[in-house]
Length: 149
Image 1 (cartoon, rainbow, N blue to C red):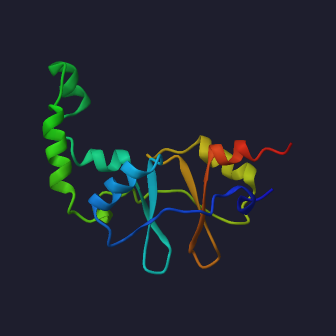
Image 2: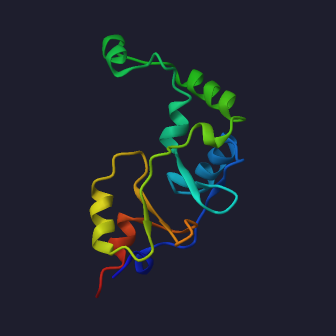
């Protein structure tokens, strides 16, 4: 079995000209936690995640060490204010540029190994054709739900 047999092809993507607000709207309307961002030729340039957007709304001073000492953090109102302030920024300013990509002919077993070893915010592997154009996405759920009967 290969990647093209298990990938999801009904993709929701953002273009490189999209804003953080566009990403927030998608997060609000969809159960998904991340979306591929593609260039004008349909090639992936990154993945915008709920975590990458939230990262820009939490003040940089809120490190784990400081929060452990403070026993608290910024109030939620200030986080929402920062989210509102970043809504007009381009999504390319907040996306994760380190993302796994495979060709459609990659063995599914290799994709499964990649999924269990992911380090970034996304829990998906992007599938591209021979020209590098995004044609699908694979999650661990995709592989498990397509187990042979």
